[in-house]
Figure 1 (cartoon, rainbow, N blue to C red):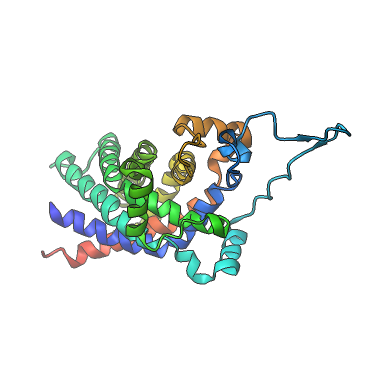
Figure 2: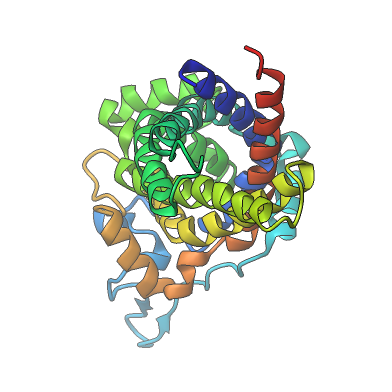
Length: 326
């Protein structure tokens, strides 16, 4: 397979990533619900209000002894409402904010993971039965996903920030012109290390997604063909890929929520960061918003992961057919 596997996987991933980008953007916006821009007055206030655990949120009137509470957070809205709000505020084109970062991310992350998975799959497949045990499929996915995520993390950070930018007040927006501009500004203003912010989360998520997505697709496809439920064609590819997308969404959503928040946090010079790390972010999120907050954005996640996985594998199978003779 060699280079061919990387090329086929890269083409399929870019097509799938671009076609489902609006759903990914909505997912990011929904995962950030419950967070509000940090007030700049003091270091301890850099925690988002929904995640701040200090006892000075109310104001005591010196004469009346009246405590005025801060305004309640805005109500959480659903998939369609978030999409419509984006269109009303910034136009239809805003649904493709950060698409250049998606292209770069898929070119780096998905090309690497898809190609590496195919190499490991070839090496670990039984030459007689032509099948690979599920445990080895999962292992191949974990390895391929981890390596791919490490390679593509800068583009992932840029994509999250570009997608989240529209939810900020105009004065606080980063206004990146492109993915390269985003990467350049992050490296200049926050240091090169900021390009790998949340990399441990990215790697963990990618390992879960790749292992669950690629391994389950191959497994579902094998079961369908072995039991004679369908022939090896479009119907089998769509069925197996949609099932794989659901498995990947369930497995990865909690890590994805934390990854999005850590990558999107704004760290001011000399100020305390909103989160000290992934565990801190997870604990603050759960305490402030409940355990179910880790599945915030699940509807757009599955709405995006399902079509993404279908487009990914259907495109991949077609590209393989076209390049079969090469």
